Length: 87
Image (cartoon, rainbow, N blue to C red; front, side, top):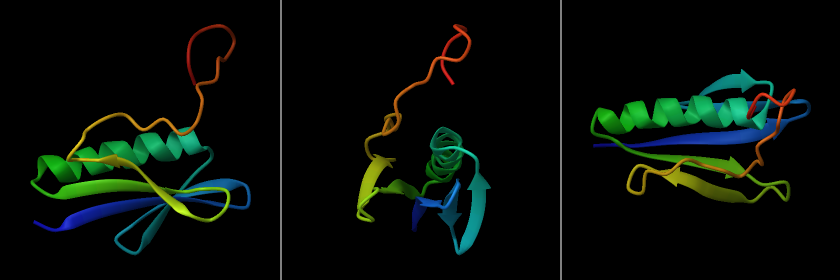
């Protein structure tokens, strides 16, 4: 099966998940990571290998999740909102 790669990059004031030559905008890195993880796990469930790759501030890239080692990505710290848990 093909490799499904989900790129996450920042442009100005929002984040983009890029997959299959399409861009999906998000207001935060957390939102982009959650969306990419749901999509990548869906690809993996269909038999594809999948990766999430995030662009660092220095413009280099880091693999933050692979279907071969399914773990939750965590490049951004959790933020408490109103004392009710994580954002």
